[in-house]
Image (tube, rainbow, N blue to C red):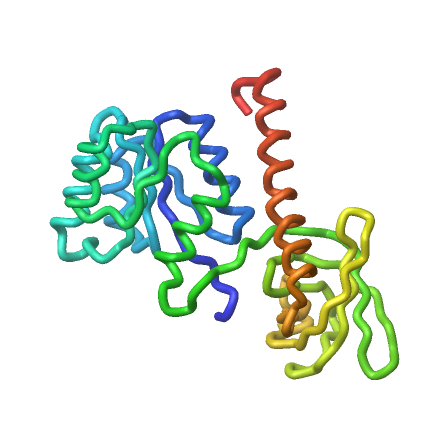
Amino acid sequence: MPFKNKTVIIAEDDYNLLMSLCIVLERLGYDAIPAENGAEVMQILRIISPDAITLDLNMPVLGGLETLKLIKDDERYKDIPVIVVSGESQTETIEECKRLGSAAFLQKPTGMADLNLALEKNVFPQRGRRYARISLDVKVTLNTGGASQGFYTRTLSESGVFVRTKHPFAVGTGLEIVLPMDGEDITVRGSVIYVTSPEDLRPGMAIEFDNVPQFAAAKIREFVLKSISKDMEGLAVAREYNPAV
């Protein structure tokens, strides 16, 4: 399936941070599987084969370095990219992670853009840069053949949009998309690359953007990343009042 999500195991012993990272990755279009220590990571690996793993270093039961070594010493798992996300800053620790085979080392507090970029480079090495994707429910206008129609979106990324409809256009249809971005309409060209059946639980069509002007691409990227940041800010505020969130 063209839109099958990639799976990432997130290992972090701070529960609130673990849940936040999972939410961020889900918003970026990944399937995130939480683990509170290295032992849980190893148990999960017996069941599924993820596309990447992120590891904190200081975790109970089984720490990050020990987990990284176990993964890279095992023929079944050694090719899975492992990204270390840690508050450790000593050069010796960073070099040890590299020596053991980590794909990247990110310093806490980790920026969302840095985490997304590290995953892009390691999960999609052949396809090049992967674009951040968010769930979004807004009305966009599609212009084709001299006619205009309004559709509601399901997801938006820097490379395209998925709109909901039981009557999609044919694959290959070229069109113009008018996107509302923080009170400003951005118009880009695109073409339909995938449609789902009307009987599907989520009927609609995927539209890939074509030759997006630089200013429009920057505006879309800013909008996507800002939307995810707002989610995280809202989650942080909610936890001030309810630590269980």
